[in-house]
Image 1 (tube, rainbow, N blue to C red):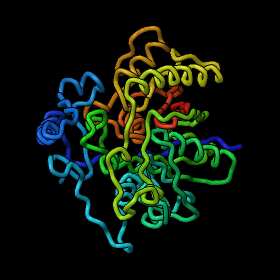
Image 2 (cartoon, one colour; image 1 turned 60 degrees about the vertical axis):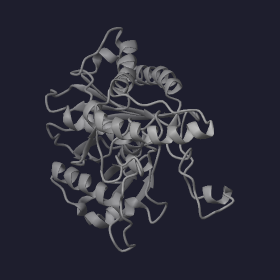
Image 3 (spheres, rainbow, N blue to C red; image 1 turned 120 degrees about the horizontal axis):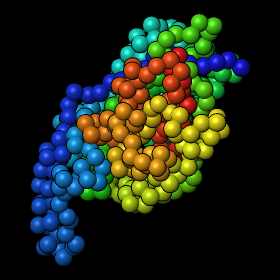
Length: 372
């Protein structure tokens, strides 16, 4: 069995961004028009959104988006992303390649050094050819590639698979790429979810650790996964949806895109996340107090605060558990990786860190890391 390290991390964040005020103005303009129609038909009226409510409910103040055009148009409220020809690089693969190249640069390697690419994301542009294979081709990697998904735990799950493949000797270097284009799958007319998400792509390079340890890198001590079925975070958009329609040429987006029962998710995941962290660390003779830094899923600031308060018995600040949620929104599986990338340079040799993401499924993924 081989020791394993993270040798490179890459992050790509789109330039375009949307503030809470801009998002609320667009949503409320839609509500005014929709309520005028509903009033005439006797349907229940929609409630408007509010920037202060968004901050209170989630901690999000801003989000970056892959494509701004169309999102803030009350008549459309969907990003306008033109279709590409089959022989062109797909939008999702292109986004992933941007992060992949940065991870390779961070590790001082090229695509030719990689023998497996895993595209681990909460949503995939298409079933096949796999986006991972497309990324593999674009960066000039050899070996193989495949796609996998586990909601917002996808990157952590990909890291779990990559680590154990390298540890067992099946692979030498694995690139886990997580291009999250959530805004393309988001119903901006749903008050429960319209403010939550943003877009980002990440990549993590996992490789065998040789005799010489490289300072400033992480050894992956262990990884873990957990799932339990729940409908509280769900999407029904898929190829079978048209088979259930009277008119198969028309597939309704309303009700089939991301939806969640927010208060239920908050309670369930807070309890499960806390238990997962405490139990995982205990397997290694550790407690939360032994961990220098936590890089948690960037979905809800209050949820993360509650999970850590249960673990520590006190409030935990940004230094111990950094947040990027406020300026980026929930970037699904990419969020914890972004927090890791931006908040590890001050750690000392031997410091422990825990990467932990949780999401739909329910699912939780974790990686226990030690600074070399």
